[in-house]
Image (cartoon, rainbow, N blue to C red; front, side, top):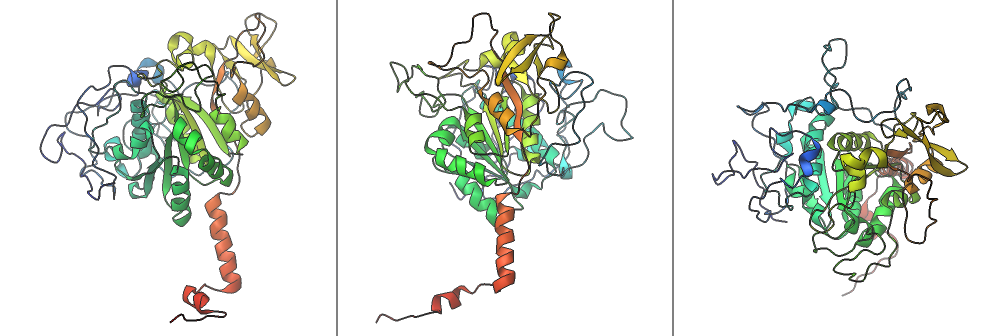
Length: 473
């Protein structure tokens, strides 16, 4: 990474006075969080190499909204609540297990002074946040150089809209990445950051967070980076329960190296490295995380920024490792890999949005999930044979239920074939599992304090000179 620290652009110009290029949908200052963030209308402007990492975060000179701009108009579907929810009348829990206390101010529309206007989802009520920070404060002056239409644009936009709401001091925010298209992420964030080598982002995050627990550390990785060369590092950060957020961009392909199959590519995948089809059985990322005993496991999609933002916030609020798999469309090398779950035409029937303590229903409440012994089954709630009371109720604290949910809708060649008269199972999105346990850095520092109390502060020079020593002349 370069030692040069870029200065954030001001008034739409870069430091050399040239005009800043138009940003793709979802990244423009007056854009919104609609699902079109990942459309093929993303910027086709020229790109350049980022000039390196960032040595320090730079806040914008003004915390005010730029002159001439206005807050985005929200689409109707975003103006009335906070995303997919369970059946009416279900009781929400007092708070998720393992959650950290929010650091920021109450969200707009809460409290006794709230007006009677519509309640907006978290993060859609403006770009303001803790300490007066805005989305622009987290945008670097580097040109975003992903392919036009890439799902990474929506993820970047969502993160930049979320951070002001978290109430974390900007100088305490760090983004660490590995190799791949997702590895560019730290360049586009006006925070501290580090672009690491293949698969090592979890190791870097472990050292950084352990040495300075006050930092808010985010790991950004891809399916190849995290589950191929970085698989060994991923499972250990999950089992240790480091207090960090891991955003895994899963597009089921190698994008940066131009279209080879990845550890999450389906069997039979024809790619540049598997011209006759892959014979490898793929990893299921959430099952890998659950197998490593992760304390927080969730799944979301790039085409639903509202849900994605709520899952990022949940991962951040969790006291421990927050593992979030994000279905991300690579429109160049694996276009449409998740369209059955993400597109409006099929999303209702193929995606199940989970809510703790609520019955599992989907397809606008016309279908539900019940457990037949250990097998989830789809039931028709309009047939008169079943009701919402027959549906399985989600419990984030149950690792057994999380294991079942992680396998739902996951079929590969050689698996048991469902009966033809059985409807296909939807794929779960949301928090599959969340539990509370001590974090790695808490235990390390507690152990250091206990040993120091018992034996006193250490003296490295005295240690080296202790015992039998000799001098070589």
